[in-house]
Image (cartoon, rainbow, N blue to C red; front, side, top):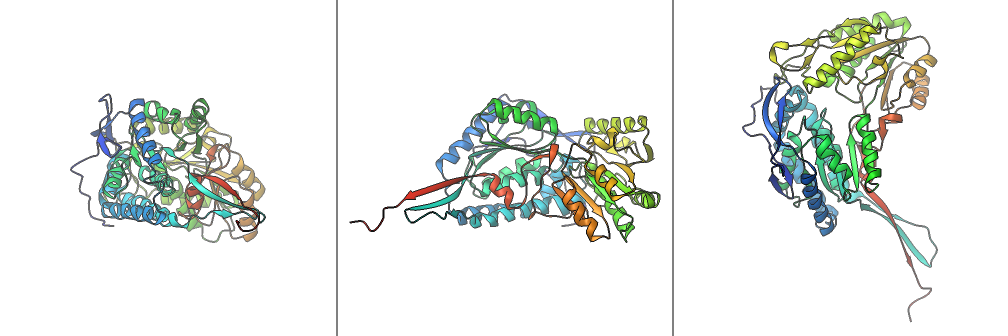
Length: 497
């Protein structure tokens, strides 16, 4: 994509998309859309509640039961989704700019990472539509048995604010590919690209009601969606407390399925035998500072073997000092703004607590670019952190790195697994034996060896322990949105008379 300065859109999405129409909230209430890079209000969104969710779910249910999308030939469903992908590609610059002004991400990231990955996700699942096969059972000659994948029905997706378009696509693309209808509730902090994508879906020929987007707060629209008795599944990416509440809502309503991705406190382990410490240091820095540290797989705990600890930390600091917060709309910016003033203040509070607990602040620790009114933080590095401290155990979700030294591989493994989370992990080593041993024994759904965040749409994404359950990405995600149905036909022996 271009590296030229972006042009701001002349129009921002400002309505729900329900049943093929763009509509305001039933109450007429609105929420402000704030640009994190300036702290300024740039538009309004509908403040949806249970009334809006009811309309959206009814629309999705009616469309699902009609069979217009569910029973469409797979090749035709594939064709519609690929047409939608083409429209997204044609509007890529618009989506990149919307994502930047809505979430504070650098335009270089939204242009070169977020939008292309979202586009690739949509095309991956579109191409998978006509490659879903059932099974034939090995029954005797008096029966013919087979199993098929049936779409679940109405899927409710609650999407986070850190990767608004990409996380939405990880849920929308496989759910629609399998023949479901959807109601998507994006974060009230970053709803613009989800609304615009729903508009594109109508232009691409998806039947009205197949994809509905309702904006609003989690307490109002999100809770109503999760409690709705006509929603068959909630798929969610976000915080642990909200994930727990969604499971309660499932139990209190219709026992709808729940798929949760709840973040992490990922260990990034560096052994002394890795031959290229400069490469590992660059990966360690970007593993925490990318996207302003607002990444569920961020390598927020850097475990370094003691014999190289001092040298390696200096290398990480050297990289970190080159990463400066800047205007998200400037193509040269590498570090943008965090999502909101509340999030910024929360990160600063955790930094202050880490200092009180005795961690050694080596870099940053402060708000940046105060004069802009935006929500910027300096890259922050703490050294000699206790793995039992709050900084090492609690998810900060900001550009804050905790360095923990270790001596032996056994100690590194124990430290790595000493967390309530289990989403991602990684290690740098020159030993194939250590690599394989850690790959099997790290309690995490993702293990990266000699590279951080090194997998793609073809590999499943999800965690162990309190990082949730269920998988996004890969064909495993496609089948998540379906039920298995077994069919057995009893046959007469011989030919009919």
